[in-house]
Image 1 (tube, helix red, strand yellow):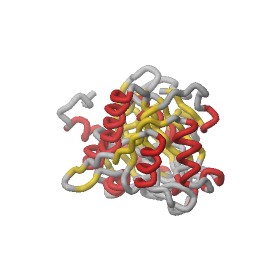
Image 2 (cartoon, one colour):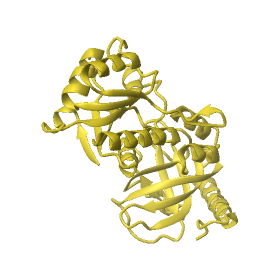
Image 3 (cartoon, one colour):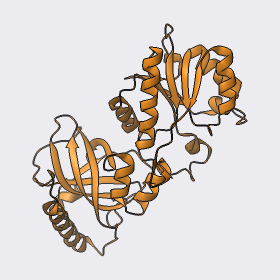
Image 4 (spheres, helix red, strand yellow):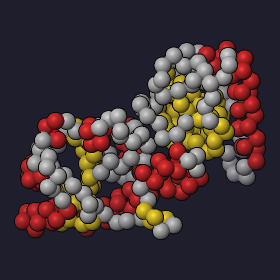
Length: 317
């Protein structure tokens, strides 16, 4: 997949595409249905697939304090879309210039002139333009005038309810990891580069990998039994992770992901780790000192090992 950061990076000889627009936060089953429709339309048109998304996400631009926590960082979105077989990812900076762009200008400058769009798939509730005057019907009219097709995104439901990023967040915040995994078609996961932390885990007899998750808000917090994979060599581990703000020892309120990998010995600083959250052990708690924290961590490790020992699948290693 080729990443295009901004319209100025669209090749001058770009010869059209089949596109969709959205946040694609978490790439749940609903998103996967959209991408399946995109691939089908691209085969019919003989053109590449292209996904348009915005950084920051529009709600983060307009009301950062009230924007929902992300399910996926930009890097995670990129990898998910790449694995889904998307040909191009166009990332448009959501700034004052884009916020001020009219609906007509977006159609003309982005869809027609830059992308030479042949087929567009968006939701029938899609709105765009500085005055939000752009809608699905406006795209249909523009498509009939300029020779591109417009289709509504397919809706995917589970238990008679639409699959959405909001629904995934709700399940995660309610500690229902199994339900979130159904919506995502895999366990909820985070990934990032392993960086040097405060090395406090070593003093607590539990060395941890400090995963840079690049989030200001989290969809859930707590201590979890996890399955982790090193991106560079595909080595897999089970372990226990703390996702949150580490209230007993943290010097700042910034969210962090600390992972203890069972049986691991070595140096993995600088590598990328993907962490799947399989089972919640407990909420984050502020303990009365490091001795109490050390005791709790040992209990967490025991709980995680018991969880994996009871599983009938391949995670028992």
